Length: 357
Image (cartoon, rainbow, N blue to C red; front, side, top):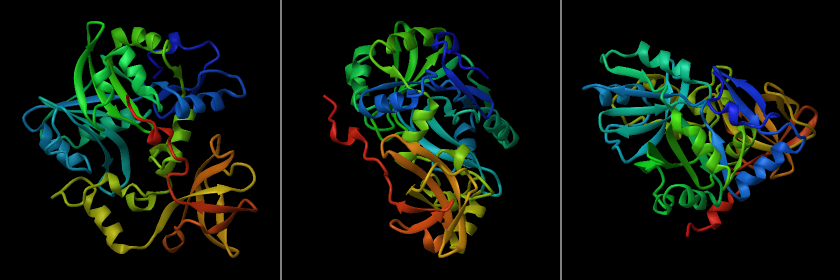
């Protein structure tokens, strides 16, 4: 699935395949493209092409009951003015996807992670015991705005009052006579917003957004997500790791009566064993996923994901190690060099010290 905005992207945009989608990794082939896009996201305002996020609408008399059963967080009282992030699990407790759930008057709207829409849609349809209506909203797509000054872009583009919405608030509004769903969200720790826009209008909104912000691709977005320990399922759900092992238990509500995968999550939690994921920095070069991690010459885990951090100027990544070693300030050996574990966030977002005015 190609981006619906591909014809508006620069000619030298670098694309990459993620799941069932081809998305812009960087909006230039220049060697410093990632650094430039990252700095825009962390220091000013970035417009994000999130059209690789599939939108799935669930409607019908039992829509909320269905959503309550297939989502790992409690959405029973999710109103049309709110959204929330949740995991979707299979029966064994493995992550199917991480979704953003929007409450709607007639049901619920789910936004998949990048390139995971087809898998999510199949999972929902397979578990549709309630006979609800599950519809791919292929008339809509998603744009994101993130950065310490993203609120100013919202004010110039749409409405200044929307910039100060509480986190996870949702408003149905209009832009150039097109109905859009506007939400205060965010993946990077910076001020963040999403706009669910008719595909017929998204090209014009993208073009006008570029008059006030710069485009940032998936590489910059995922780097910024890693820096604040925002889960990135496609990198972290490896080797059969469960919710506890990947550190995403905050996206699960075990106090719910029931949801798909609950028994497996409870079993993993009560066992208290297995491995845990922790951030690290340092070393020489960027180790590949699966590189072994050693402590005192003993194999204690593996690298989950690692990149070069523009903000830190060195390698930043995640390792999965024995539970009693998943702590900050410890030294391990990875690919023959020493690394040190960290507590998150690994970068303090600028937005934490920039007020919305």
